[in-house]
Picture 1 (tube, rainbow, N blue to C red):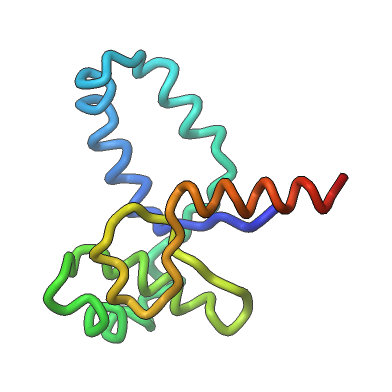
Picture 2 (cartoon, rainbow, N blue to C red):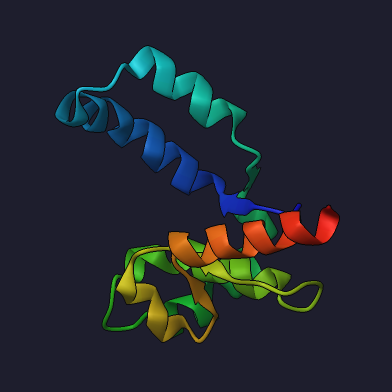
Amino acid sequence: MPRVVAPAEVGDEILEHLPAIARKRRLDLGVLLPVLAALPIEWIDAADYSDHEVEARRRMTGRDEGDWPVVALALSLLSSMTVGIWTQDRDLEVSGIRNLTTGAVLDILRELETQET
């Protein structure tokens, strides 16, 4: 199974917006919260990727510069593994790091599942 990591502040942002999303989509927040907690995501603290903040901000100049933590985390992992950013956000295309849509991630997971059987 691929390793899935994300900046902890992204997790905090999700938690902040989840109640409004649940209301808008008429979903049960009491179900969504445990589902989010059960996802196999390793939440990474900013201290672990802050060395890459300047470069990440530079790469995001003129786009959604608030996405710099995602880019910084990806940059911090590039030397040790193949990295892709799972996003539907086209702003991250300027990062220079491979972007994967949800469809592409599902295709990769299907391929891995096929290889395991």
